[in-house]
Image (cartoon, rainbow, N blue to C red; front, side, top):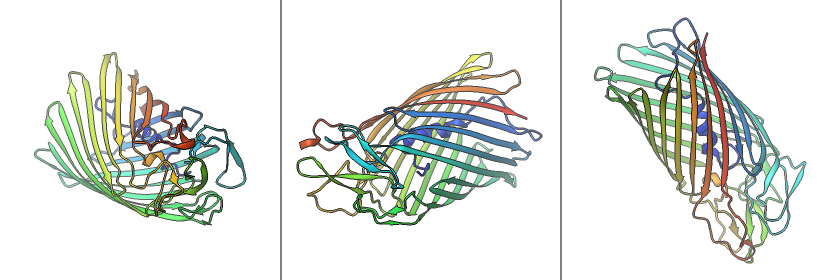
Length: 418
């Protein structure tokens, strides 16, 4: 089930939590020295409401600084997902029966309930390596690679960044590039996009490539203020569909007349602008980041992320966190297809491509131990609310066509050296 696109509508929540697991911030307990390894280890537990997806994700990151800005890093991640995954169909007035991706099992959804595949499960293992070193006095280079494997998906990528210091090292300009190749091998085969769900025409496997560029500037604004501005562009080409997602076809009376597999364009270009500020407030640290993204599918998103690291004394700290996210829908997104409407080439009811607002809020507690290791616990809640839904008619009236989503995230992290 391609964990690069977590099942359910809470992609941004799970990704944000995963990225936050090992994120560094000013005032951490220790840094790696030339004769020891620095270890960041963490476990994330993620659970959606309404018996939907839950995930457990342990992560271990190793870093060693060999001096003169020569730094080696490695990371291993394991994901295990289970629970009920929405298949994209609408709730109905009568029971609905669907097949699992393999076609070996059937499951029936009660009237008024969101269709969830109760047999959903997946596991992923991902490896990442990175090397950084100085080139001359004011320049650094970083190169790395990663590989990820699932039952139905494999990805391999490479990346590189060149950074140069100016203005007595108060200004850093950077240029980065990355390339990724994906192999998609869905359980039961690859359905032809837009075809009838009950009479699938399936192939063996598909592929996709992603190439990206990044331009960045980091600036020391003052003794207490550090700012970073990044522009990124990436383009993916190849198979973009989620092979397990379908859409309901609705007749003029609001009854379900059938289902079709989703179909997305075979290319996607995205641009984003990211601004981050870190400000020392006495012994505390304020972090504020803003991001704007747009793509050629018609999606525009805005993100604001705020953290405040409050030093409590005795090596302990508290870090409240709030994140707001809003996006518009892809131009081919719809909750359902009208049977009497003009046929379209592209279609998807995947809520990750719809219009919605999302809010994440929570708090992290951390403590620096006697041996200079650091233990922390973070608890957060995610809430997603669909926007701009179509008007219900006929038999659809009174049904929750696009339920919102709530999820809880708990992560425990331990940083130490050996």
